[in-house]
Each structure stands twice: as structure tokens, then as C-alpha cells.
Image (cartoon, rainbow, N blue to C red; front, side):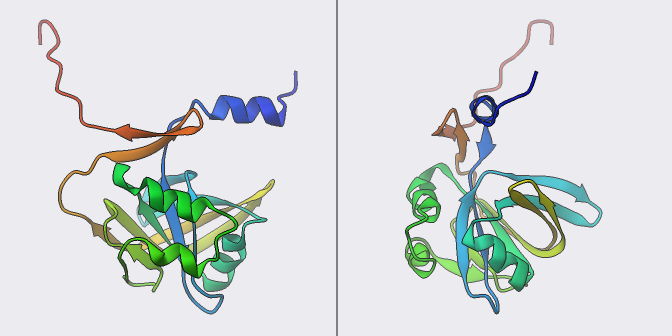
Length: 171
């Protein structure tokens, strides 16, 4: 039995994923896009990965710049997520919302993000329609407080909130 692209996409919609804005800046310019394909790889050295479609403008920019930043979004950042997900929006115009700064690599860091991971590309692997960028984390920014997280699940935004601790019988 083979799995169709449509069946795979429908099944993947049931996998909740954090919503992130991936940014880069360098000789190829400044750019960013919304992505949910991000995960930890190892903590020695601190490394994470992001998967970017080869047809996305940001893919070539990251390859040329050699750096990227993963800005994890909070529930309040749905508008920023939508702006960076809009393929028709010019790259520079995407940075109109939010406050932006920089860490070690020069990639844009969203000041209001719960956490930002500033990375240097250590490896790029072509896999089907995407490039898997492995990035060594060379800078971190963690925002004070505990903002509710933003995830994408079943083709829509969902808010992650802290639930009260349940006490199990006999515990």
C-alpha cells in the first residue's frame, strides 16, 4: 500500500507543532517565513533543525547567508505568523510588525518571542522537496514570563495554556 501525498498531509495535520518565524540576514538580504518544521537535534553542541521548501525564497537566502534564527511564537503572535506566511508579502514588509533586534549571527530576533535560537548552518541536507538545515545554536534569547504558546493543529492555530496540576489518587 502506498501513501498518497494528500493522505500524508491529512495525517500530518493531526501532529501539533509549535509556530515559529525563521529569519536570516546577510549577503542574500533579510528575510523570514513562518514554519512549524523545527526540532531539537542535540545539546552537544546545541543544534536544532528546520525544514524549508526548496521553492521558498528563504531557502536560497539561508544557503547564501549561512545563518538563521528560530523565533518561537506566543499565542499573541498570530498576526505576525500570518504576515510571514503570506508568500505575496515582500520580505522587508514582513518585519513591519513586532520589535526586532540581533544576536550573534545578525539574523532578526523577535524581541517579544518567548525564545529565539540564533544559529549558524552546520549542514544542509536535500530531502525530497525540502532542505533540512541543521543549525548550531550560537545565541539564545529567552523572554521573561510565561506567555501561552502558539501551535498549529488540524489546519488551525491553537493556544497552549498551562493546565492546573492534577493530583492522581494514591499519589
